[in-house]
Amino acid sequence: MSSEPSARTRRYLAVWFPWLPSDRLRRQAREGDAPPEDGPPVVLAEKIKGALRLAAVDPAATLAGLTPGLTLADAQARTPTLRVVGHRPDLDDALLARVLEDFGRFTPMIALDPPQGLMLDVTGCAHLFGGEAGLMQTVQTRAKRVGLQSRLALAGTPQVARALARFGPAGLFELGQERAAARALPVAALELSEKDEEALRRAGLKRLADLDDRPRAPLAARFGADFPARLARVLGDEDVRITPHRPPAPVVVDRIFFEPISAPEDIERVLSDLLIETMDQLDQRGLGGRAFEAGFYRVDGEVRRIIVRTGRPTRDAPATLRLYRERMAALSHPLDPGFGFDQMRMSVPWTQILAPAQQGLERETPVEEAFSRLIDRLTARLGPDAVLRFEPFASHIPERAARLVPASARPGGEPWPDLDPDDPPLRPLQMFDPPQPVETLAEVPDGYPLKFRWRRVLHEVTRAEGPERIGGEWWRAPDQRTRDYYRVEDRDGRRFWLFRQGLYDETPEPRWFIHGLFA
Image 1 (spheres, helix red, strand yellow):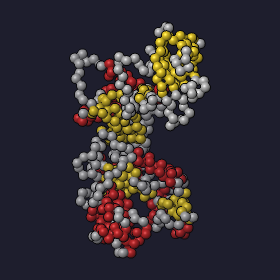
Image 2 (spheres, one colour):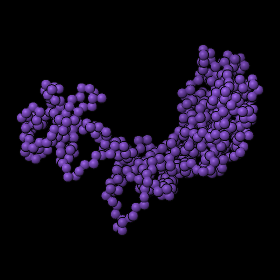
Image 3 (cartoon, rainbow, N blue to C red):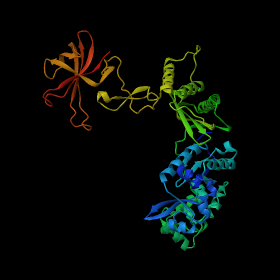
Image 4 (cartoon, rainbow, N blue to C red):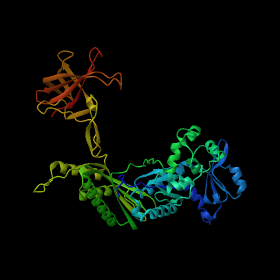
């Protein structure tokens, strides 16, 4: 399955959870001998403007005529056996976030659709589940398995699907049917303010068809300039694409299992098949992967993602599989299949152009490629933060002109300076952080030192070059002093990089430091 947009008409699946109980509430509802559906109605209550009101109601409370927004006193008067639980929106949000990760098995293009909903772009995904009807049935079964009641609508735009799921009959709507179904929706599907909705009802405009048959200009003058656009979106005349929770990868390959797998050899075999198919898709597009993400979807809804990165773009499936072996063997929390994985996914979130390379007759691996593979194996085994490389940084201060980043990180925007190989090096290979103090003896105050003592050893300077004056970063700290750097060589041919911190007109006694050693 590829997440690239296609020329076909897009299809969206809206999933709405009318009752989204948190784990805490579901545990409380399961206490006692009777199952939750046979127990008393349950509602969530919260204080709004000084009064306790219902924030959410379960299916049993809905059948009893209770609705969100009703005062708790009225609800208890209607249903004396009502069970009241304090509303904890943070727990509901946490549950919905876990459901979002779990439902990512159906499509990479998934986003939150508040309140209490998800929106899935299922274009090109339905065939994996036996068609659109099979996909909807699978989603509903999955929601029921985690204890959630759901309403689903599949249509051509996300706004129509949302309106049909929340305010209409829900279900599967073929191309050309969405607009007729949307016209039959009540004006509440526009989700206007209570004042505007009441004004529409008083004017006799109770359904979207009543608004659709009228000119747009008077509606815009009465309800705002954005009202026609809102109406057009709910009717399906405009398609506003969703912003997915996770940016979709250029290449995505899925495996769905009729029976969950848990044996390590089965998992590795499927991982190998996924990599082979992934590399084939990369080859067709002339790309190579720099990061590969394997997603493991457990039967109980837990999702585990494992990423390996490479120093160079690659389409080598066996080499990538070896990296996964190294990475999975070094996990601090080993991969736990639980009751088994019912789906696995391989995605490539980072790709680069990779042209075909001519293999040598002796099939020898180039030195650069062999070194890159070594870095990849060390990164997979030790973790990305354990293998580092230097990257240039935009600063004229020597100790800030480079920084350490993970070896597999994306390259920064700053290039290394282009130096003439015939010129002597301006910066030493070994630098001290922080610079180490030295004792010096100079012929003139502003000149280079004739002698200096470092680590109890006295060095007599025979050659010197400088000064190279470097000012402080005044925008970071106004009291930074100017530095005068000298490249010096002693009688034994050893070369040092010294600097005097502060000028004589800035400070009465400037100090000397050694900042690095030349090779």
